[in-house]
Image (tube, rainbow, N blue to C red):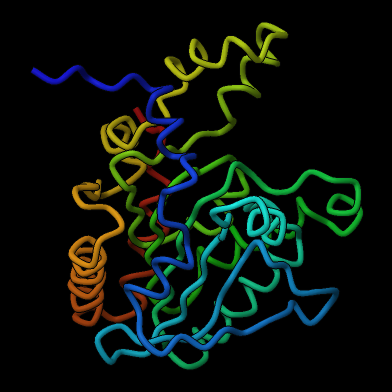
Length: 262
């Protein structure tokens, strides 16, 4: 009988260098991806990659938080920690998708938004808050998939969606285990203990009704795996096609209002 994975084991799996990143999904799940750059205010943030693509011939907007696989790529993409201009770029692309009635697919993989002085000076908190507000009323369907780490507001800024899914060995948490341990016990070495209490696994999120689906990771990174993800997204978009956008928005609003209710 297989031993059940501990929460901190899943944390380490979610962070693994070999794990497929946002660009891997973009290149294998979607076709004809055309990247769009910049927030039209300050810069182009490489931690968030977004643009127009097709899913089985259907035009969609894809937005991914990208970490990279090796040291060079991780530095280029700021280790998947977006600056405010990244979130503003994402919002710009979402508003464009709304205008042209394209569904939005978000791929989330971040330990959290970048917390440098420059990011704070340029309005990190406001950028995240604006995404939360605008995504709640965006008049086009949104699917968000947590493919690795889902850390705090940095992840939530791309996860106010009609459907939120998680890969089997991904995590979703208000804070990293190390950050939690540092605050509670002044000792980051107690991260494993913190992970046991944070309820950060996909199974925890499903039981708490924070997400709607857990995607199994059998064959992760293979063509068969990416095809399975493609089919799941395509099937869900077909469901959205049957409902008027006002009904979709009402359900989105109620979905988040119910979180945490007893």
